[in-house]
Amino acid sequence: MTDPSTTVLVVNSGSSSLKYQLIETGTEEVLGKGLIERIGQDAGATSHSVGSEEWRTTAPIPDHAAAFAAMTEAFASHGPSLGDGVPAAIGHRVVQGGARFSGPTIITEQTIADIDDLSALAPLHNPPALAGILAARDAFPGVPEVAIFDTAFHTTLPPAAYTYAIDKDLAAANRIRRYGFHGTSHKYVSERAIAFLGLDPEQSRVIVMHLGNGASACAVAGGRSVETSMGMTPLEGLVMGTRSGDVDPAVLFHLHRKAGLGFDELDTLLNRKSGLLGLSGSGDLRDVQARAESGDADAELALEVYVHQLKHYIGAYLAQLGGADAIVFTAGVGENAPRIRQRAVAGLEGLGIELDDQRNLAPARGERIISTDSSRTAVLVIPTNEELEIARQTASAL
Image (cartoon, rainbow, N blue to C red):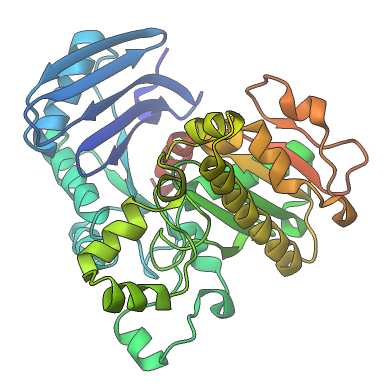
């Protein structure tokens, strides 16, 4: 039986979408979940699932308040029932918490003002999160709300890791530093890896490779983030589906002067038209792999660039940590692309990293080890669960 006092509604508000899960934190069971898409467009779409059953509807959803109304209607029509203390709390994913928020934070008027102020650092992400917070307040008056920040896990970065080598006064005045993202996933996955291997958390050294359409690497020492690939924004670091990752900043000056591209065009280029998409014509790694296997030279080069960058960061983080107990692959690509995992660690046997091909290629889904028994550094696949981590942190904040 559901305990109303332990139910958390996890909300992830995007500019045109709203994902949600109702989780009982006592058993960590997902009671219901859904996705509302095309908010603000002519024809919105809602999908709602309970167990193996799913229901879909289409109707205009003009804003996030309407999205919350559609969500509550889905729960009312298909269950589980909201009301009588359900949910006990609402946990919101917020991308940018700056240097202010180092953990889950109960939302107050000051928190709302701070999230709004930090929107300058994440103009595509914080405003919709704030819209979701305000919509939840109207839909569930009196229910505590908690903000879980993507950046919070990385507030333990040392100054040498988060400081950019530009004029320090200019940087301070404009809050320019490395913040890092995917922190909720990196925290969850690194903790699961430590538990899976039975490591001493305070002595553990783990490298997490969160590889999805967005991708980032994180070096975790003693359970704390000490280095990460994304920077002031999620653009820096690994090659991604549509984002470039690391690029010489002078490339932008050159494209402005020689190709006449303005700031908005450069922003669109690096965030939406680069990465795998820019190199191969597709931002979906599955498509890129299929094209490469059929002999497409552009697709094969895209994979080589992608893997080259993965190996670059694995090597860098092995140096930063002085070795690692584990390298962990997670998220859509990390969990489901064995060839990418194989290529990312190929040739690293001299560093004590040996992949077991049979384990790596096995069609498994859960937490698993894919290195050989003799590998000094374990290589793992750990499915991420950001929604569960948000629910856990929300419950802990209360």
